[in-house]
Image 1 (cartoon, rainbow, N blue to C red):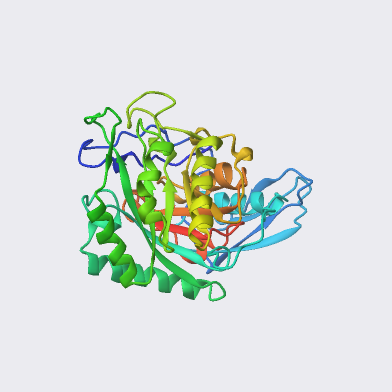
Image 2: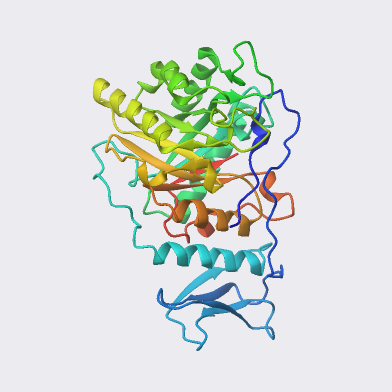
Length: 376
């Protein structure tokens, strides 16, 4: 299974560089730039038959369809041609679309949204990072006014691409940051001060944006880290993110040596804690974002409990070329339905090989359509 490169560069001010732990898988499909018409038409076969990719070699390297061995095509998907995309990218996108359409578990059956729920009525567009580091994401890379103005442009892009779904801006702050050094308590994590969280909270309030507090527990636990943030989580516009990549309590290794993991029990604790806050403080439902780009990052996902007071987003994290990201969305998010889905975009790392950042119109072709989009 393909997986995108992990985001280990998030280790704040301690680990100077990120060593990738996931090799990019090899593939037999050539990277051939798309050419010809303004859109590429591919087709999806019936769920009952095995498909192969049919390529018109006489054309311009453009995939002509996905069909069964008899050449039958049951459904057609039109994928717009985007400058810089490859044949491999288009095939991976169609594979991801087809996989989601075949899976009868989507949309996930669960509790009906309560009044005040954000999802699925809105799509969240979030900027991620930490003001103390320019390397951890766009949230800290630019001065606040520039960063917020750029977020406005992304929000407008998504609103144009899908006028039927209102867009909700958000700031996603790494509030507990995994570290390469143990610290005084040996937990390999650094907690942000309340004053820094308040600063970012004010930025969000000025834009009528949500605030997500992200937790990289290191050798600590969600049970230890979440209650410390209760003062902020009691606010109606503050939500939670968990990053299993840096959850090392089960392996005992320090962050950066390998990819971490969280179990359904860890996620259920977080969800239950948020649900209690909602009930006790008469709050609108919370959103809980779980980062994922490998199977092992989240274990026992069928045991994750659904509660109408907490809306769970399984978020395709990590960076790579478009085909890698599509494959990871298919293999680690679509293939293990929980509730809602998200997709992460990296302004720098996704473009290292010359690929443009994926656009709203491209991601809206996925099935299920992601309702949480994060930019780093």
